[in-house]
Image (cartoon, rainbow, N blue to C red; front, side, top):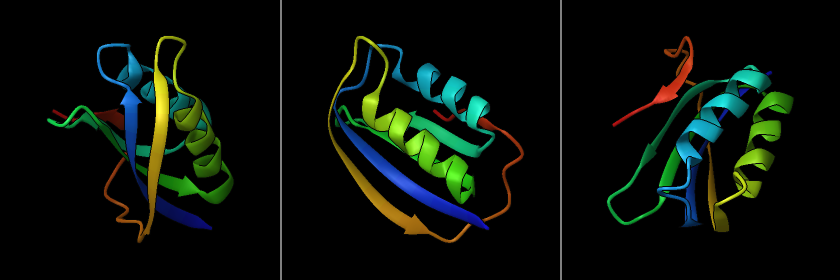
Length: 91
């Protein structure tokens, strides 16, 4: 069953390759959506896909890449839009 989640990630998550880490993990999990930096230093992530694949990416986001330090992940369950064909970085 397809699902969607919207994450807001806090901590040391900008300037450490976080967005590119999320893209690689998303492609490996087989989900679609986007990731972007926010002006307040957080990172925002939209994920759509099968529930198990979405959970897999959520766990990776909570861990982050080696040089990141994730302190909080705010999660909202959303309705899938079905408009994404891949996972990418939004600006």
